[in-house]
Image (cartoon, rainbow, N blue to C red):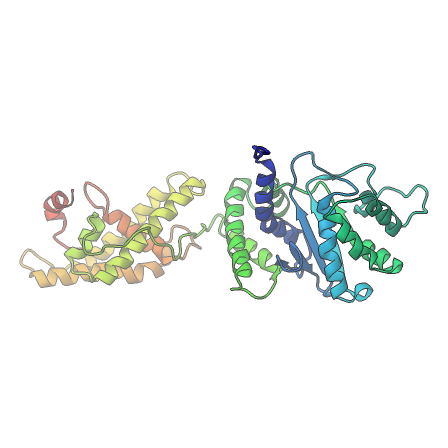
Length: 407
């Protein structure tokens, strides 16, 4: 009984091959004219369609380091089998189609496959046609996989064989999957400051993978165009300029259930103190989560300048204190509880509804996402041991007992 192979490399390369497809498609669409489109796993690994409707079927082969493509390499002939089916389907010589093989391996020096390279070596004797070279190679095989492909190929006329083979281009030594991000960042993100390119690539590829999933699951029916990538890359790039910051937590929610009734955090306790309804408290918890995580992301990506967040919080506190003084101006020691609650709600109404639209409260001029401001106030309302902002006029006088209850 044969022992099971302990070499996992080939399986690993096969797995990489599936991941390679979308990443390589992203690279190629950035390199090709913007009106080029791509479909994935339709007629081949990738189908590229140019503005004139010419379709290029691309087979991708992510091989082990040092792998070589020879006359009877199954990688080549398995692709030929796919291409022959499409060639026959589309009318053979009338077909508006080309065939590309992208492989991370290299074509062997003495293989007739050298003739399919983008820059083939000179034909020294000038006598043998591509069809004759292919026939000679196929005649030498007894492979159970390749023999049926040879039969399909030999069903073509001599002219059709020559026409079919003339449509094939092999791009050997193609970038490996780990090299693609560096190529994209170096060649297509030069307008972005170098320290931001890793973060920007991560966002671009995250968006791209979502688009690809939608395409493969049928949620998206139409091909993906190169200009879509250009537009998205441009939009992301705008967020990394000096008057802006990337917004990456819009619509995000914390893991698990949101418990507005029992959440013990100080900013939530404060909202319950002024009688805010549970659905509004839930929104506050979302704003807090998004603002907190957004700040953490900015810090990880080194997008904030020295003391920028501290100065921003000081601005929020200053504006809050000015509005507080206006809202609380007519209150005194004799003010009824209902009046105090009404004043607290009015102050919170300003922070919850109006503050997000106030330009002076933006951390940077073009950061207009309201949760940055709203969540900023909740972060300040959650500061221990004493909150930097509060809503109920008497909150600070009884904060000790409340803090004890939430410990």
